[in-house]
Image (cartoon, rainbow, N blue to C red):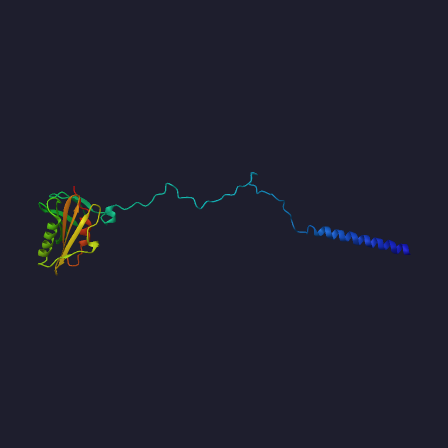
Length: 222
């Protein structure tokens, strides 16, 4: 009887020992988890390793790209549609906008007329800078403005926006006076060795002054 109990105890101990070993072995690799081998490289369909493409967002623009062109003097001054016109009587050419016409009055004088209103115009006079001093020319200009406005006292124009600008234009001085029916502004400047005088006879609201000034800035020797 003792031998049977002894044999049963040994069998039970052996079974418990085997069960414990099986549990430890199962915990080392739980069911449902897959281990992937290290160093696996993704392959393309042809078996070659796939190369990762890196996009460089800092690449410069293509050399063939066009850049914006700088506007010409005519475009900058709003004279894209102007036509270059030479004086018949004087040694100059001027860009003339549509709606205006250049007419020669007499030797030494031209008029740039408004086509639909002949009372509004700009007289253009040129002479060599060696023929007269600037002071004499300016004094004569003040007298001209005064006489054209019923002896109004002319005032010097100090607003640079109303003075001609451009390459080669220098020493620009202008005088202006006004009546109930007309504004007279006379501007003197030097360019290319010429003294140029522009005298604008405009309406009181100076409707055409800006156009006359822009066209006057294009005057150059032929």
